[in-house]
Length: 354
Image (tube, rainbow, N blue to C red; front, side, top):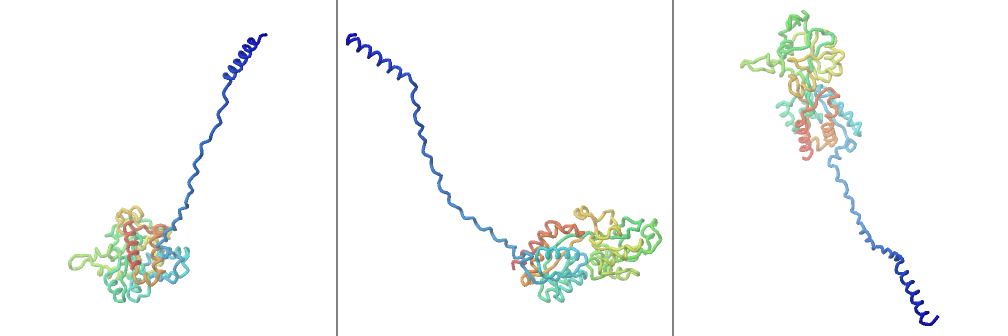
């Protein structure tokens, strides 16, 4: 083979290798990772301390000393319940709750100055406010609930279920002395009357709402003083400041009739029957809508100076107002209207800030 031929063959072979190389798949390019941005360092935000509860000073376990309350036998079971709960929540002192009637309660609060709180089933009278002022006290009113005054007979009474206010007034002024005078279909048996005594706010309310409209003065207007005299002078009537005594008296005879706070009926409803008045039963719905004619407000009273000098009294009243609606139905009464209870709390806050 000549030199020129060998050169040609080499060129052909070289060319074939070059073409093969061009047809081979290209090697994958290396993956280059993008640099990541490091997260910015976090700066811890200091947690703000929770604001102090401005009412913590009134916690039951934050105060000490004693609390003395007295007054209405109607308010008594409610205040007694609140006192028990106050102590269960940590109050180590004593809470005294005396049942002596609204009038006697105001006397101890406004005249003797012996109590921290007056319980009342009626609003304080002008003369009682003047007595308070004479010893340097300015009573503050706190509405705590509503009572439906229960007019009751024995469960053994099978002839009366409903009375009008007029019929009731005539019974308690002595115009009707036998049941058949109330209604000819009733038995000709003497009516046995049971009533709270004159120191009771329940007595005052009953006289004003039921008796006084039948005891008119010379001007033809209802006269509560004449009403009181008529009821207190009723021959054979039994009076007591202790509602439990009245319960026992009424349940003991099918011809007896009496009245007291609804809670005492609830406690004794197996032995007693509550009458409808003007066709309306004493119950939550009819109290709330205003149709039960013998519904009345319940109060406690205290004084700004007492709240300042005795933190335990302020704490008890604050606890009372804050928790009363959770307990009042169980006791046997009805909640005060929301705006009235809020007004009580507003009055407390204003007095406590003095």
